[in-house]
Length: 155
Image 1 (cartoon, helix red, strand yellow):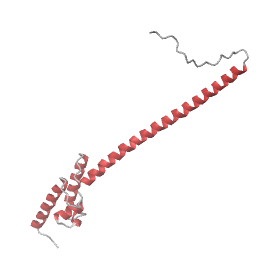
Image 2 (image 1 turned 30 degrees about the vertical axis):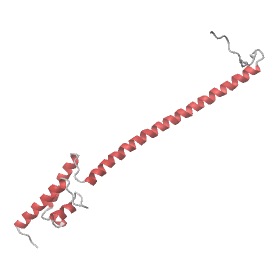
Image 3 (image 1 turned 90 degrees about the horizontal axis):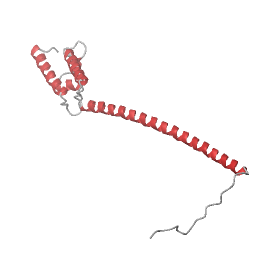
Image 4 (image 1 turned 135 degrees about the vertical axis):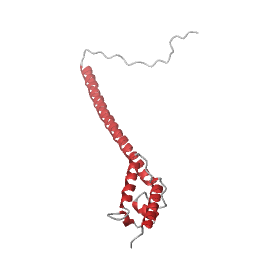
């Protein structure tokens, strides 16, 4: 069915008005900032936006305007904005996780090295004690006695 020039102009005006509303973020319940919602809001068949159909130039215009908004960081669809925000947050959390894992690896290596050093020092102490016990020229000091008297107090 053919439409008249007046009907086509009226349809284009409705499409442009719906396009402006969607790009401002005024989305209908359950709608997105896409061609399907644009067609529904303008009361035009969605297939009229594709191929050599009469409103394909308006689809191109809509997609270009939407892309320029995205490039400028302004996302009219709150769900798309939420997805972009969550993707950025996930990237940041992945970076934090990688840094935490690196710190844990470094601390684990430090702990392993510290334990190895302590074990080596313990072995050295045990060896020195055995050497000292075996040597006859080393005299043992008597064990310290615990004293219960307090040494000199001034009054």
